[in-house]
Image 1 (cartoon, rainbow, N blue to C red):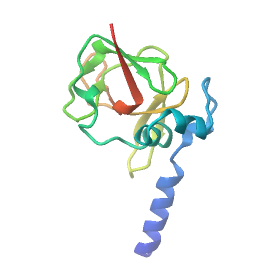
Image 2: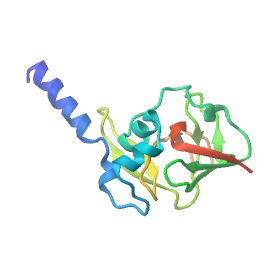
Image 3: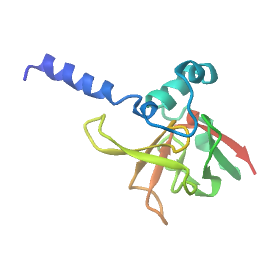
Length: 153
């Protein structure tokens, strides 16, 4: 295969996986216009188009106050602060979500298989789950801070 064809097919494969959550049925739905009106550009790119915010850009990464992290898209409680830890990655990280808070799907966009997580109620993209976290779960929910809202206890 010629390099040009490989690159074109690769880019098409990556692009075709974007925005998949918008095609599924969720309890909370909005039109593209409604989502764009309520979110900033980066929030929209991350939450609706499955982009990733720049590492170290979220103030929530270094927030260790007691409270709960909610979905910016529908206000569903997602993560308790007592499951948050410093992963050293530059993104807010948790070892466990609240029960029935998130959904997952396989993500093959970057020539590897990862587990992508989203809000189970509105489908907003949150980040990815990896198997290199602390006990008791051994998981690292590596999240985009722009997808979250923190409320202190």
